Amino acid sequence: MIEYVKTILQKVSFSTYLFERELKKGLRYLMPAEIEEFRDWCYQMFGMSHQPILNRYFKPA
Image (cartoon, rainbow, N blue to C red):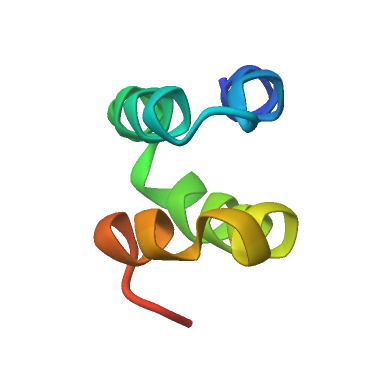
């Protein structure tokens, strides 16, 4: 499931609104063990463009 959520986020990263909506939905689908890996990936991929959104949903690493 984590790969599916990553794919969706990459496709909607052009829009702040869509990115936040899909991030919120994606977090509901992930297992607790996957969240840390997913958080790290999100900050690596989108930290420059969507950091305020990521900070709302994750504790900054």
